[in-house]
Image (cartoon, rainbow, N blue to C red; front, side, top):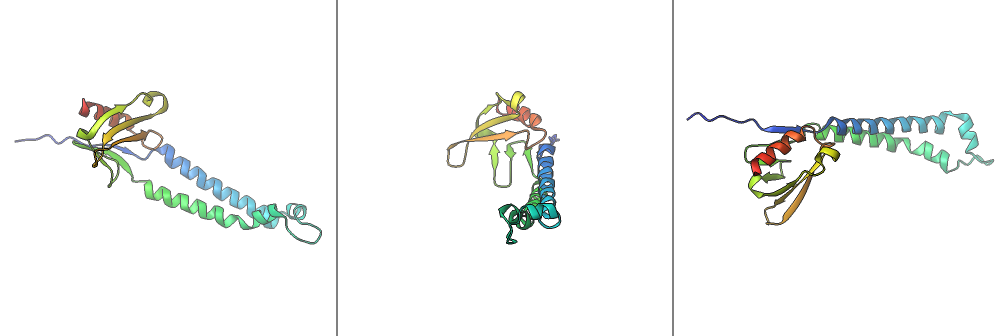
Length: 159
């Protein structure tokens, strides 16, 4: 008995999503640098936002106190990027594995709505969960690459 082992189809986290996270982290760092410069080094800005008694207005206070929060935001974004970098959807022989906790068997899939896949890059899977409730799961090509192969595999499996 020689069984042919079919390879699972994988859809890793998309480059679009990874690049978006990187861009937002850079924006946070850039804004932190801008605020540090205006809040501590730009004499003209400091003079403009300080009253005659030497009290800073809300703009100067924001520029002096906000940089740590922007840096923390950038760090959190980078940590999130590392957390999701190996995440993927896997279409196996009998089920679609979205995460360790979310697995959709092909028998439970009621329908696949691929109306907007070509134009907007997403499709919706309607399936019955463990409690026999109908659940809609939207899969978007901005979050995962190679979704077209996953969609073709799903359609072939439920047909």
